Length: 265
Image (tube, rainbow, N blue to C red; front, side, top):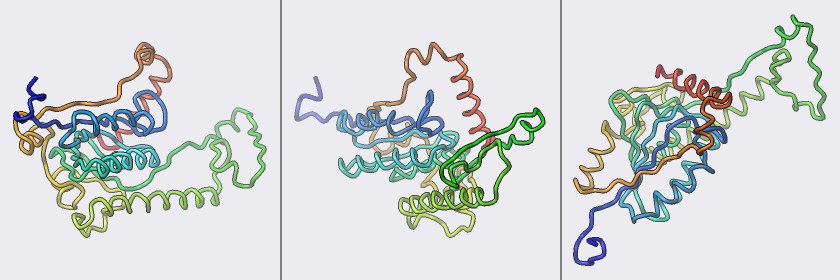
């Protein structure tokens, strides 16, 4: 009843939005704009929050989805005049760091990995393997560039050059996002946008984070010990949990482990 009595002040509310996992348009447990949109909306609108805290643990993924999620957070923050604070757990790298830039302040553990401001594309070349087994690859296209980087055909220099042009455009957009959001806090470090990563205090020194700190004590220090935390995070569908041992879930798990392993996690 306390909150309905006008002359008694109620405890402030902070929404905690958990962003954990690979950023991708589909797949079990993936972070993407379509899946997160309802959670982000509730985090900003429910309970008149004094702030929204992002709890981030992501090695990255899709640049487009990272941009869409971060843009949605910023739009709601600006519209509702609600500050956003980010707290990094194990890692906020690549697209994971793009998500962190949606915050007005970024905090991390002294062992958190931050950065990797770059673009990566990986694949396999299988043309020699299928040739050894007497398999002939047949591809028919209308358009000279339609069969770019086919893993079953020898790599073409022009395909690699085209891919690098695409990567450069995405990299430029990533750099622009970081500069726009971090501004004068960024150090003049030549390694900043090379894909390099930093840990804890070193990340603060180059301006990628604002300080070392953990979510609960930092929120209590700012809003008081009586602050209420409303937590929001994605949940796997019921049938998805039942099918946890299915091939798709196993493949997704392997992919996620590989993504975290790039950072020694």
